[in-house]
Image 1 (cartoon, rainbow, N blue to C red):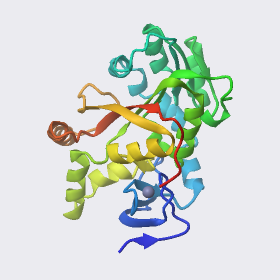
Image 2: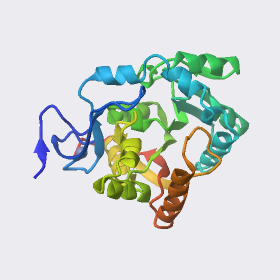
Image 3: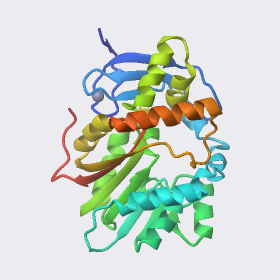
Image 4: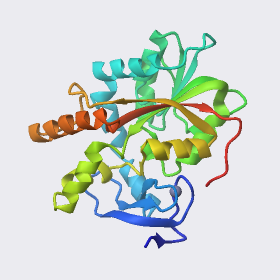
Length: 297
Ligand SMILES: [Zn+2]
């Protein structure tokens, strides 16, 4: 029997009915956002109900930007090669190449985009990241996506890398993106896939009392836990349709992840196994605009 609360609404379809997955209201680390992990009874989106916005502000407060900006991931050869592969998979139109990277951090994706002939610009809410990107001569502004004037912008490509899973209201951000993306433009979203084999194993382990994999996956600062199905739904509601996706396995060269040898083996083996069945943990989705945005439901 699903629960229902007027105060708890699905961030994708707005429905109030849900099933409780995990109670993760105990804060596990400085940057974690505590909350209840719920599954929408209508669209099946899995999301975190955060009791107060103050938990979100705390998680992204002091030290978070510095931590992210000094992360090896954002400046690594691994990330450079990964971004290059992502952009190489874009539909080639032969037209103008204007790209906006939302949540650009220190701007590595912009560097890659420029090397591929794009006029690239980025935005980020972190002042520290924007300053570092500017020092590299990149066109980056410290603003929110909602502050971009839609009349002045018409991008051919907009990228949202490792970002949508942090948004409390992803639909309004996607709708805003729709207003600044050109008619033939492409939106690229990179996010974890919560219908992956790794998550299925973590759920099984949780049932037998081994809780750390579920705590790691759902207990951090992510609040939206998409899979390809719920991402497609969110895109449709915001006026996009998915064109194609790219699923790939964990790369051992990815820096920044602190795994023990046993955990690393676990991740590699099960992610490869999942990939064989189209259920790897990481997905990149390419979407285009539909004629008009749809109503929720
Ligand atoms: Zn829903």
